[in-house]
Length: 261
Image (cartoon, rainbow, N blue to C red; front, side, top):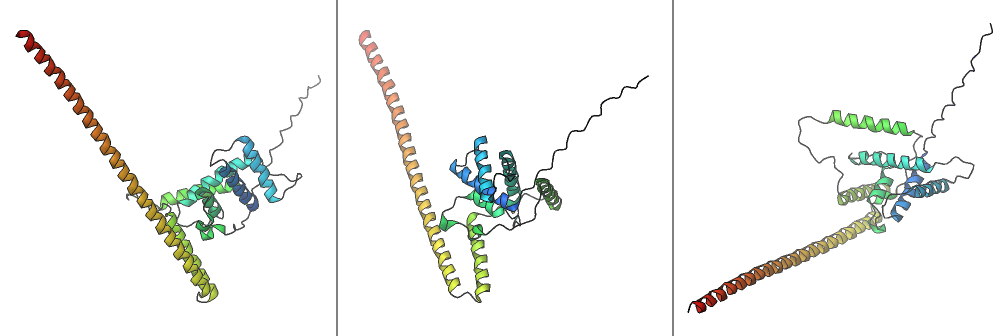
């Protein structure tokens, strides 16, 4: 009796692993997304606009048609991971993440040219290739270690919150001044110029704060005047109603007296 042989099934081909993002691709993605995001006034990007971001990333990296560039979906997923990583890094006192300054400039900006932090223009440090899974594992490990190191039965504090922008800029300027002092051997002309820039920035900031305080005072005074007028109108209308009711009752009483007579 002939034995029937069943056809041998070939397993489906395995999906190739995703190509990790290179540092130049990541930096180009942040810059391309920032440009598109600002043009939409920080609105949500649509699918066609993510395609434009993908094309812009390929152009910034100098890729041609033969090079396998990142798709729109990959750009969107990578940007979501970058923003998630930025939110976790922002809670730390200092971050060594190479893309922190670019992401911070994108989230806080756009600044005027003369109001940007000094080290916001520092180039991104080139790091070795890392997959998106490695970044997720690093975030999970960082979160677990932070929870384990946090003391128990302690009132919540605000030490881990990011410092205000003014203090951050002051710290950046101080570090820059120290570096100039070390390079030039005592400061000299560079230190004087930097001090004048800091002084001008401080004077401008004080003027802006004074203008803001004056505007707040004017607004508060205007609000009080309007509240006073509204109260007077309500009291006057109530007074008119009471007088009208009193007149109506008084006229009815006089009419009854004349009828009785």
